[in-house]
Length: 345
Image (cartoon, rainbow, N blue to C red; front, side, top):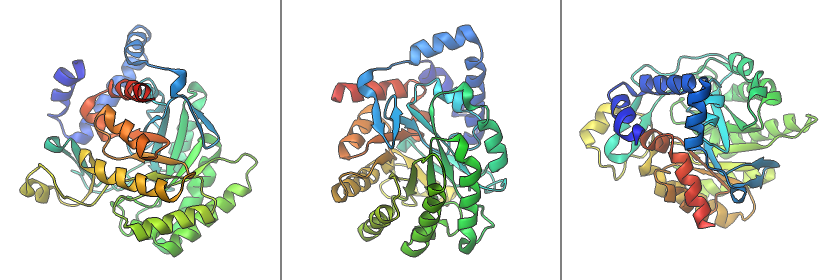
């Protein structure tokens, strides 16, 4: 109620990117104040053994995770764990620091409970990222590392960027996500094509085979792939021994929006997330599960209400992630989702 009637109206008066940093910073302060933190955690906490999920060689306390993009630099994983997430994915991180695309680059579509972003992998680089994770002993939450390439790196040399991030990050995360599906880095999505994707994943899995401890590697895909492309994805994932798929990233589609065409044109390019993505993400997850009964799938995209999470799991996802829904629903959203999942079991 506090978020809906006080925090959200104030935050939505601010630039979305500024509001994001301000909100997380405030919650970080709250989390460091013992008495207040204890009260907040008691309000948001909801655990049940029935929610536990054993998959990818990991034990998830619940199937509800935070999607990549919220915590690009590994600054807030302890803070966000207080909301009750079963796991948190951080990044996308690149080898070198980069500013991303010019601001304004994040936009709200309140009529659609959606966001459009063209952030462009803005992050402080892998070394700063790793330096924060070295203190990870403070948190026992499962953390995934989402890795990408720098904008200035041509696709012909992309493997090198992914290798740098993979090697430096390996000791500090529980699983990896190879991100080739963001629409906001020029030509990145062409790495989803069969030949370059096979080469990239083969290289990453070969690097992993040299490690003493095996950690899961997942591929994050776009929602804009057709069925033939999804078939190729499944074939590559199986042939290269990739552990799972995250479906889906943001979409470049602008169909069936309540926001005016004029407003959409003013915003311009970017990836659309939130409620309008729900049906397509469900379709992709359902298609993947129909054609492969065993591959682990993390469903993300358009989970705007607790029942959306239940539908995503029913469609074949093993775990789910949220981002835009959290912005519109507030911190209690995670607890509501977990209750809905438990009620559906």
